[in-house]
Length: 381
Image 1 (tube, rainbow, N blue to C red):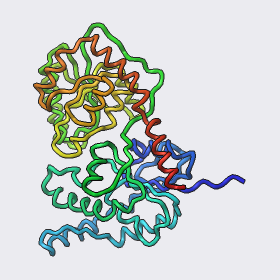
Image 2 (cartoon, helix red, strand yellow):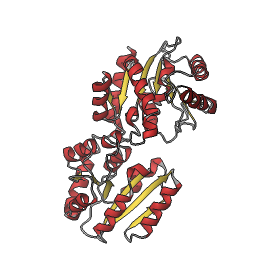
Image 3 (tube, helix red, strand yellow):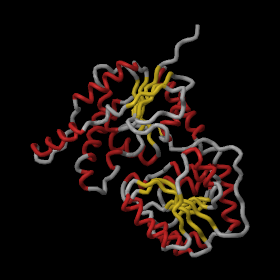
Image 4 (cartoon, rainbow, N blue to C red):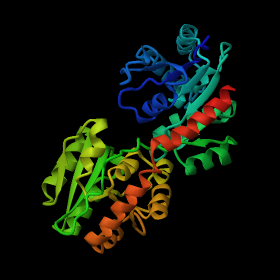
């Protein structure tokens, strides 16, 4: 008789169909668990059970109660648990009856330690939440305090903490005393893509991702302008801020070698950017998470077999230098990056592309999924 698979609940309140960390979890664990995933869009994998969590998100009433609490306590932030949300989570757990729960949004972590906890609990943190937007004083004095309280009170109770990079893992250990399994945001190994080697022509650069004002993407437009017509920069962006979108459009229109292009679907990113020469990301460290950024796009650059140009971000810079993937500027200024890029020849870029080809076999989701599966199996046993 074949034993029934244990049940895994992957809990998020965000879209699932384009969530890389959730998608990788499903790929890693679907052969070993009956998986139920929550969110506000369905997963791409039709074999996975799905529950809509639109009604589990904090309601407008709860946000209002939080504001009223601040007024009556002269600015203190509500650190407790909303009973209505707790009932929703308890009802979800009663319905699914999981053996293992993986929680993604840090704000919901406290709700999984109720009297009904009869499962192993994993917290898969996408950022270092207590400092996510530390440059915003209002956020720092509200959500910054809430996340610090959650980490102090609950992090040591989770059965497994998963973080995206070594820098954040060290911070969780140093500040909150909790060790982590590091699983970066690496994509799957793309077989069959060969380095696109060139001996002449313009050097084509690509940057892709969400257009967030704090990332100061205008610096890369200025960079391309300074580099001149030997270089071209395409920026494939997803916009959340209309005013910032308009600002970038205006800057790009005034720069001869910069284009803002339409985004492609998640599964088409790597084959699309393969046509370029250099993956570019100059990210000023305006907050803790930006300093230790190791984003999806970095690993997509590798899988697309591109040369890579980044600022001295510790996590990205370490991998660029370790695998000889490209260049790391001396600081986060446009001047420093211009100095590095202008020295590049096609021969050097080709060498970096070949290094990316070798690194693609190592810096991929499959390698990290093996580590994740081993830790989960150890946990369940």
